[in-house]
Structures are given as structure tokens and as C-alpha cells.
Length: 355
View 1 (cartoon, rainbow, N blue to C red):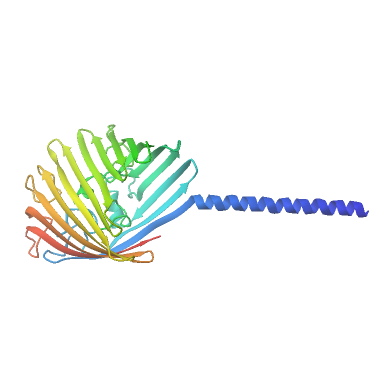
View 2: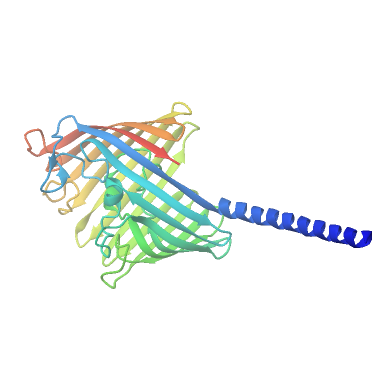
């Protein structure tokens, strides 16, 4: 009798140990899965005022009476940027990114997307990827553009307002891209995509083609889209531990209508929590492209933006002074009597929280 009881006791003890081991294994697997899944994003808001321009809003056009012709941060007074939520799964070989945006900045970022949805679209990026090997990655879906120095999210930009080069280049693409790591220094990207910024579907049955050649953080980009093409260089150099210089230059042409420009981004870190940066940009139109708002062919604009960035934990406070000076009177730069003028000076105070 004792032998039977002892045998049952040992058997039960072994079963209990196996159950604990299984629970520990599942717990480790769940923890590993949780590490692969991430949730991140940002929230931003700002205050904006013009020093020599009208601070009103045109209800008919839905546009501010005076603001730079570039995208984002153009609303008068206290204004909203966007809430950005990014869900991602980074598996060993495959994964996905679902990047959702809400608010005025998000709406402007996906301006050409809400074709299919009658209530609009909140998708900034939505793609899956496959790491075919250590040197080859395939991405399928909707992804932000590979051209340009600046991006849609205010977290990744030093200046809060954006450049003309960024604003009139593409924002996003939908298609298939292949990234190749050719060596430790060289990379190559090739892509076939819907027409630029047509991210929900292809309404024309025509396709755009993109390529990028990278070397040690410097990138030469090319985009061909139904007769139009853009060549873009994006890069930057750490000149010292405190001083960084970013560079962006681009040329866009579409049947004698287009633009060209160059922007420099010197930034100096005065401490661990504060950096001062300048964006100096020259942007010129071919024909009457419409970016500067003069209604005159071959206009140009020189814009200087001085931005401070103070970091408090996950919060960035960005005071910004900007001066846009055009070659001709611009209807984007209305004075207090609503008359066009050649220049506009403005101030922005932005708060950006990232998580």
C-alpha cells in the first residue's frame, strides 16, 4: 500500500513539475512575442503668429490668409498638429507596420489618399516586410517616401515647420520595394509603385519607379512618374561632437513645369538638452508651378528658419523664427490689408511628445 501511494506521489510531483516547466516556457514565449510587438507614436500642438502678415483664416478657401507655401504648421493662433500611433511587429524574418494619423497635420500628409473611403483615411503607412536574407529586404504596401531630408512626423524633424523641397516632393508611395545591403557602406533600393501619393489604389493603371543608392549615410534618389522625374540628394555630416550639417538638394521636372532647390541644416548642440539649428533654403520654380504663390513664372523664394529644441524627458519644446522672402509679391504672404507682399516673418512655438 505504501509503495502504491509513493508511486502516485512521485507521478503527481512529476506532472506538477512538467506543468510548471510548460508554464515557464509559454511565459518566455509570450514575453519574447511581446518584445517583438511595439506601440509608439507622438502628439504635437503649436502656436503660430505672423509679424508682418494677416493672422486671419479664409473660410472660402479654407486656408490661412498668410503662411509659408510649405506644408504643416500653417494654422493661426493655438493649433493642433497630429496624434500619431504606430503599431509594429518585428519578427525574425517577417513583420508589419501600421502607422495611423489623426489631426490637421495627418490630414495634410495623406491629402491624396482618401479616394476609396467616403469618410477619409487615417493611414499614414501600412506595410508588411520580409527579410529574405541578411542583405535583402522586401516591403509591400504603403510607406513614406524615400526622397528628401525631412519627414511627416515632427519627432524626426529638427525644424517644426517644413521646407519647400519636402512639401512639393512626394509624401508617400504604395507598391513593392526591395532593399539591398551591398556592403557595409553601400546600399541599393529599387521600387515599383502607384502614381505618387495615390496610396489607396491606382486610378490610372500607370506606375512610378524609384531607386536609391546609399553610401555611408548619403543618399542619391531617383523617381520617375508618368513623364515626370525627380532627382534628390539627401545627406549629412557630423563635423564635430556638437556640430552637424544636413544637406538636401532636388530637381523636379514635368513638361517644363517643376522646381529646383537646395537646403542646408546646420545644428549645434549647446548641451545634452538643448540644440540650436538653422535651415537655409533656396527654392525656385520652372514656369508657374504654384508653390510660391506669386502667379508669376520662374519665381523663387529664400527661406531662413531658426529653431531651438529643448528636451524634457519625452517632451520637446521648439521655439521657431522663420523668414520667407520671394522674388515677386506672393498671395501666400498677405499683409494686414490683405495685399500681396514679397516677404513674411512668423513665429512658432511647438510642443512634441513622443512615446
